[in-house]
Amino acid sequence: MALALTRAVSARLRDCELTHLDRSPIDLERAREQHAGYVAALRALAVQVIELPALDALPDSVFVEDVAIVLDEVAVLTRPGAPSRQPEVEAIAPALAAQRVLARISAPGTLDGGDVLVLGRTLRIGLSGRSNQAAIAELGTLLAPHGYTVQAQAVRGCLHLKSAVTVLDAETLLIQPAWVDPADFPGWRLLTVDPREAHAANILKAGDGWIYPDNFPRTLERLARAGYAVTTVDVSELQKAEGAVTCCSLVYAER
Ligand code: CIR
Image 1 (tube, rainbow, N blue to C red):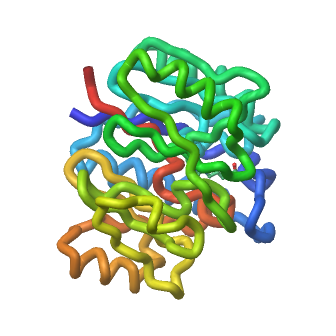
Image 2 (image 1 turned 30 degrees about the vertical axis):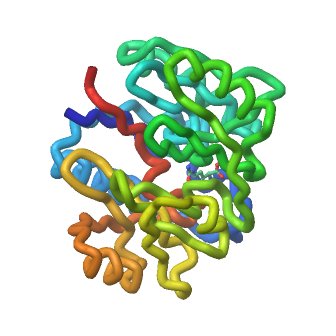
C-alpha cells in the first residue's frame, strides 16, 4: 500500500518564498480547502495519508516534498536551499523516523526534494538555484550502499527539476522541453506539455493513479489521449506560492 505524509497549510503561506513568480494575493481559506481536496484525492486513489499539523511560523511548510527523500531502504532529510525553509526539516524527522532509517544532508550541501527525480535505481538531481554539487556528492555516498546511483541534471528557467519533468510510469516521463533537455532521457517515452502551459510537467503518481492540476486543459488532453486517466484538483492558491502537486506530499511504499 502507498502512504503519504502531508502537512496542513501554514497561516503564513502568504510570506512564502517566490523565485520565478510575482507575489499575488493568496486566499488562505481557499488554500486550505484546496489542500483538503488534494488529501481527499490521494485517499480516493487508495493512498493512506498521514496528515501533520500546520507549522504557522514556517510559511512554506505545506510543501513537504522538499524536506526529505523517502526510498524503500532509507529516508534522507534534506537541507533546503532557501534558509527560511531549513527549520522544516527537524519538524518532519519524527514522522519519518517512524517509517524509515534516517540519513541527512549536511552543510555546505543544499538540496530540495523538488529537485530529486527517482528513475528506478538512479536519482537525477536538478542543479537548480536550490540544490548544489556538495549535496549531490553527499547523497551519492549515502545511497551507494543501498544500490542507488546519483547524477546531476542540468535544468534552467524553473524552480526545481520536478517543475520540468516527472514520472508517469516505468517507461514514461511528462516533460517541459524549455526547462530540461529531452536528450538527457534516452530510452524513455516522453510526453511533452502543451507549449502554452509552461508549468504543466508536474504530475503526482500515487496509489492507483495520478493527481494533476485542473488548470492545464491542453496537457490534460494529451494525457487523456495517451491513456492516463488522471484525477484533477484545484490547487490555484498553492500555485501562487510556486507550489505544484508533487510538492504537497511525500509518497512512499509501506514496508
Ligand atoms: C519555495 O519557493 O520553496 C516554495 N514557495 C515552493 C516550493 C515548491 N516545492 C516543490 O515544487 N517541490
